[in-house]
Image (cartoon, rainbow, N blue to C red; front, side, top):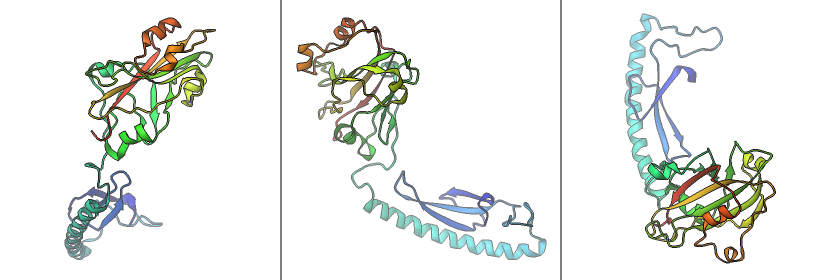
Length: 278
């Protein structure tokens, strides 16, 4: 049966079904069931010499209708059995520690979304660009971003290849957004980043603060992790002072920016996440 002559609808019963299709979905980790049938007036064969759109003669309609009714009853029975078996199998063996099997990315809104400017991308494995979103709880994403994954790829397609940039990742909500007495917590700081590296997302530059994974404390709510990109003045050597190197908490971003005349960020983005057990 040519697949270009077949229509399919998930979990639906339609007149004259010709079969059932069962396949596995890698996203939801559950098998899916689909009923397939021929569109009226379309020939089942489209091999050499056949005519697309040929309709069986009147002498064959009764036989075809009887066969379709039989196949319909069989399809309904098989569908019921497959659905009951699928539900039991999925409930027992797949993702037992997660309430949902599908990941949904929720975009930031209000003032949180206004921080995202300039198409700056922050890319983590399996999640892609998480800029201006909440990190989803499914597939242990919050645990992995704080315990497993290393530094993200950072892309800025508009970067000037002839210029250098400063990249920083900070948490303004330490230890919590309601009580940010340790803002800003410095998670990553790079200087002398060539524009060519920003275009590809593979940053090296000169490391002033090694990457530290986002690790919101338990029961502290959502934390904003802000990625800020500054154009580095030509000939300017950017460095941390002795006191800044001692502690990554309670860091004055404003003083740092003013000291090296970095000006406003050329682009910025942020994502929100919280402790993986909350």
